Amino acid sequence: MLIGLSAAVLVAPAAIGLASALTLFAPGPNFLLQLRNWVILSMIVGVPIAVFHAFLIATPAYSILQRYLPLRWWSALLGGVLTGTAPAAVIGLVAVTGAALGGGNIGESLLMMLAILPWLGAAGAVGGLTFWLFVRGDAEATPA
Image 1 (cartoon, rainbow, N blue to C red):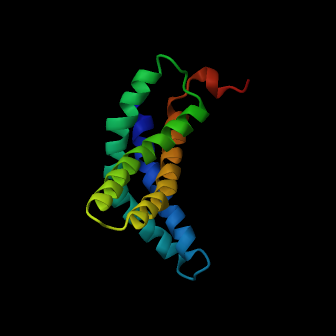
Image 2 (spheres, rainbow, N blue to C red):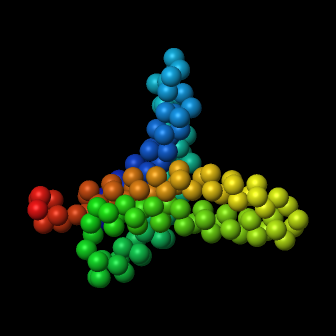
């Protein structure tokens, strides 16, 4: 399980770097340079965040749920999406509430939160599937 968590913690931020580079620089002449830069930047920023998500959210959830539900690719995908988006959604709701109480722009705060959730959900999905690839049992590895 530790190898799966470690792989997920490394792959999820790298996926955000890859997606960022593809979105911003794909047709450009410096794409490979920008790809390298964005992946390195996302690893520097993203790995500590991914470690937090993996050890404080995903590991306890997996430990509890594995007693009741077998680990399947779709449950790992869903768990990854929830693990990736839940903390940002909670922080975003706190920010929206703070903006409302402070007389700030609620719509702008809400849009900023909604703009980042798909990126975090995608990174969580990649991390969840990476975890599943390492942790799945022999029975799940063979086709049905």
